[in-house]
Image 1 (cartoon, rainbow, N blue to C red):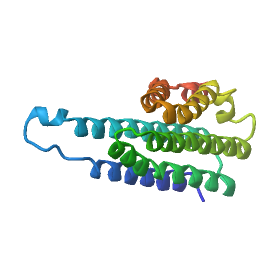
Image 2: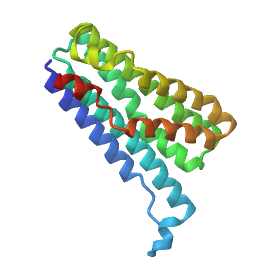
Image 3: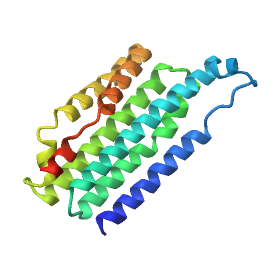
Image 4: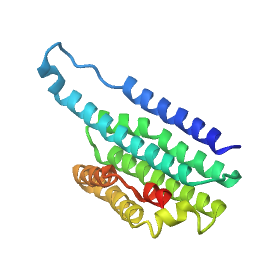
Length: 193
């Protein structure tokens, strides 16, 4: 399989996930601006936005990883499929989080999904580095990957925190998302060298 085919398949899955989430958004119970600010609509929009941003972050990082790689193999294909599996749970966990109004268990499940998706992304990155070499563009760009490690620890901490104080867990997940919204130019900078 070529790298382009892997990217196309992954892009299609991500597009479907975002479509599923937007189709599940609750409609306001009215026709005024105020109806957009009703508590249930606010929660739905917030959870959608948080999940959309997380999927977009994974999509962007996926693009950068594959852009820096030259070869893929069977291990990379399975690592990529593993990542897509966990990303496909985001619409489910988003909907449960929204409908529960941030109850402890749904919030912890949402954090677990994001945690395991982060683990899967790390495995994909390691697989790509293994097949492309320790001196590859991706290996040089990621280096020690402190940003990835910090976000992994914070997302992991959000799981038990969500069971104790769900909004603190959500806050931690928002912080991790904001960390990744800051453009990560490691791959682009390395490619330009």
